[in-house]
Length: 221
Image 1 (cartoon, rainbow, N blue to C red):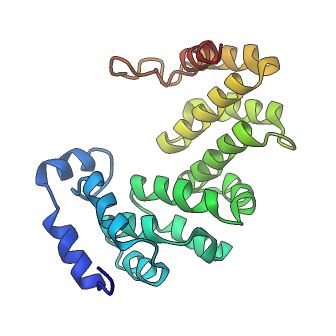
Image 2: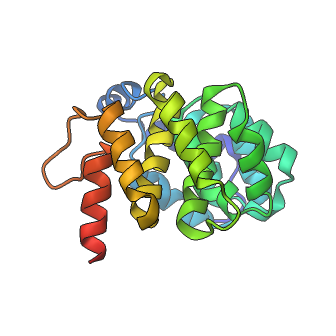
């Protein structure tokens, strides 16, 4: 249906709220109770609508911002726009979707990676590390991988949670992708023991870097 307004969509999102789901999400810092499958169905109906997405984002509502991120045109944003959006993305899910669905598809990915990586705010820095993980996997040329391992070795143990997770992912990615650095990545992971005791559901791979690295290398054959 074309021409839907922000007010109409906000009412629709409110009707999709499930108090039990909100309670679960709030444990992870996400203040919404909308089933994400249903949210994606709304986005599929709306298709890409940049102006509407900007209006939804401006509401500050978490569910509305998640919907906005599914209907934006990533290449329509200036670097400063994306930087400002990340810094006001208080919900972890909004933060993740912004980085993965928008920033990674924008022409400003590398500039923002460098900017955020060096930021003093650990949440902002975690986005820089997340983009670095992507580069390790897809375009490692030009990255100082030894330097990254040194930084992880020095800072990961005592880093705030979101930054710690991103650094740990980078450690695992380097170990998985770079055979010449694998032994060092495994040794760092074993010694720091970050996420060693993280409860992992049956059938899922532990986020503890040595287990993660070895499992993914084994799957690669």
